[in-house]
Image (cartoon, rainbow, N blue to C red):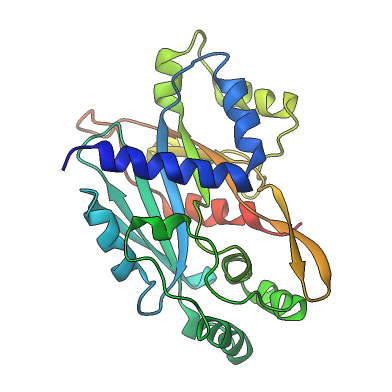
Length: 271
């Protein structure tokens, strides 16, 4: 398979993401003033650990695009597990796919999720599933708040559905082609000057050169959804920045750091 299928996938994914993430247009326009070619480090998705939509199922669509498993991760405090995938063509973005373990939630939350998912419409049997939205009935506002009190991830996924949760700037590639070198302070100031709020959990910069990966993320955009009690504002999607460091063999680290990701998840938390 040539890379055209992957490029088409990312093109459609990006268009869908922009509908939920107006800040991405602002961010990219600001960045392109310094480097017109922006390279995406990775894209992230969320799902449930139930048959037909769990990681084992969804990764088959990634394999059809020539992706390979890179590594796996666990987030016990958030009831999540995840896998990362890498493409043989290093210019093509990595993918981070996480899933919520429903049976680790309270009985009340399990019942809300199971009831809604039992009425879901059939899922696409190809990679268009990743930008197909919500296939189940919207929970009531009270149900949403119950889920959110236990798992922001669960509430977000039940309300928003399948979309790219975030795209990520490859800071290394950006600097290699930029008209100036952007350190973290410069990037953050650029975001502030464009009224883009950053995720402060664990510090704006998550990670370190010692773990071979530094990351920062914005606070997700607001989206208005018509719940049973009227229109409510919740979080949609966000944008991330990733800076990678060389390993002992001199090659740039390609994996992820669970502690970083654990803090990045909070970019969609309701404030």
